[in-house]
Image (tube, rainbow, N blue to C red):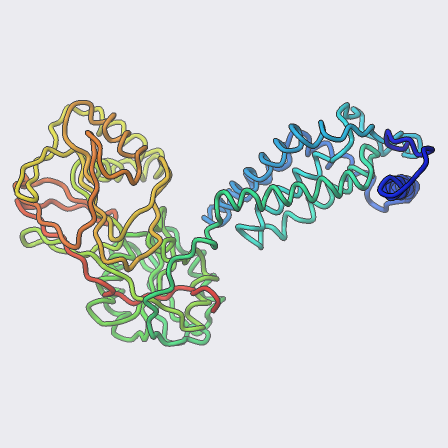
Length: 497
């Protein structure tokens, strides 16, 4: 029943302390074995088995990610990453450093015991470490999801003593190691909250108690009804107008005529339309993400109704840059990205299939069709030279990338266009993939990057497609791009507010 330590040897100093602690540990184990745990019999052994090989936590991560919010997805990924680091530490160092035998099962009722007893050493508890690592990792990204997972993690840890496979100290040590692994993972890859966008330049915007003075237009085509209802509950004095995609421009204009603050709920294209109206009427903009990608809202730091309502009621706002393009009689603004080349073709092809097979499958199919097509690269002149290009990308602000992960902007008021080009040549798919893998690298035989305040492109074949914030239009021979620094005022929750 006791660990593999000679308790009859003379006890002095540290050895005496260790002897005392081990004796207390054994008595606690016996106390737990003899105690009646109401309601635990049918639950804890099954819960303990379900956590074998992390199965329970992988299922929990899938359930969290299924909520389809970016915070939940990050929480699920961080929980699994923390679990992996904890398991690696336990299996390579913990179990091999302290070779402690498992408890003797005599005091444990037969109905509590696991059908298959573990054969590894007892110290520390791997199950407790995995449970604590997953729960702590989730909580570091999303306290709400962490609070939901914590009781399950605690029950798994307790189940290891209840079923007689661990001493209490094994569980405590495993829990501490698991939580430590989660914090170590955060030190390696900081959470989104640790990399908050700069608070400057802060804007003077009105606080709207209960949302009074806000008129928000929600694009029903983006599936925003649920978020519109949530906003009504959070801000009962706000006016929410739900409409179809074709009616969005008119409803935004009407809303701007009576709003103190113009609000919008939809994808990046809908937000782009709202930004144009807000700029024209000199109104601050409140953005609630409601589309597929929502790059601007997420880079702004607004992920859900809670974020936006907090900013509105406290009067937290900032000024952000807007970028503008002009080509012949066509002009517009973009909050996220502008592109020429294969990407606009991909967007148009994706739109043909989205209603039939869904957004992501349509995107994959469109990419395959566009990259396999027999085409010539785009010809464009800039800086006095003609260049064959497969892709020209201009971001409204500097995009930070890691491998193939989606880009993110940390500063929405940095005053620059982030211009990336993929040079023309053979094997366009290989060149585009290498550019995606390279991320922020500035020079290579296949691609280049530069940050400028304005850009003038000439020599473009008429009818070439241009994409901006997910919208596609045809361009003329010339295209002008320029930044409008700090032109738009938007609501955003600020750190410490």
